[in-house]
Length: 347
Ligand SMILES: [Fe+2]
Image (cartoon, rainbow, N blue to C red; front, side):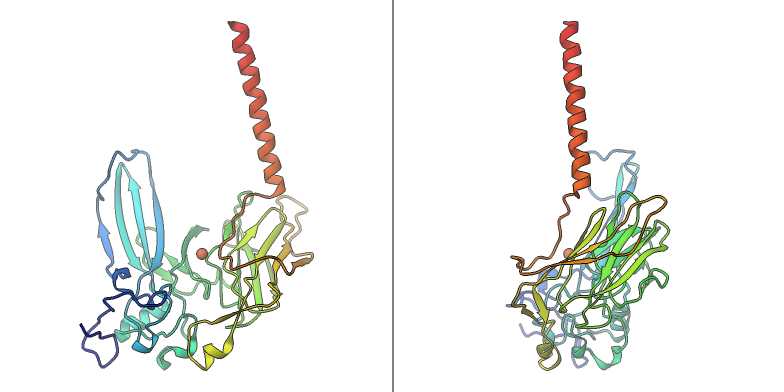
């Protein structure tokens, strides 16, 4: 079967019928596209749902809106448009709803009825008509904070969705101007003590820049802390860790390689960094109550770490929380011993 794609000359839309040889086909691998927005009242349920379960489970992932142009087909599968979905639990029922996130990119492509954006994180491959639009796909993560359901992609600011309908409310949300740069992580964290949202953006002043922005927002979305830093090279910083006293970043030891991006029009290319730089720590000095000091005091660089490619951080707890957990376990053990002794006495 011959393959057609969503080019202006083609009579229709046709995704490749076979998976591409490389890692994905620009979000257009045959079996990986859905493209249908859906509403399903009363999903089938195996077993019984608790009647007092009242809430929603949200998720998001890439779902290609159109096949990429033929010259861009060998792209990474991550580069599909964000498609959000929701399982809504109530009164012993579960309903399903899904909606594409109406990003600036999605809206432009809907109007043109074809793919307009080129290779993953390479704006030099885009159609001229989309210059200046956000390339964000909002396809990586959904997160709820300060009354807003947000969809994230780390190369752009969040997109706000209506938590009930999943309709797009704001296609370029900067937390009311709190976010000054062009990017925001897909993996923000919530401080379990203060309820604050802590996030960052890397390459925040444009593709290949070494500027990192970090900020926190309180439960009402008001900015409580903000700072800028420079990293030694433009490497991916996909995730980070937050403790009571620190924020920690791993700058992945792969630096952006501009030549293939600009000259060869390939997707975001990266080259290994010789010295395996760096774990980056910034003292956060958080803590609630009066006298709380915000702002960073010093930066600690750990270089030549034995680090390979690391995408996600796993937070197992700071020393403080580990100590608290150990104390709690010891307390429970003491209570159990006393209870066992009392039972023995009664016998
Ligand atoms: Fe991730």
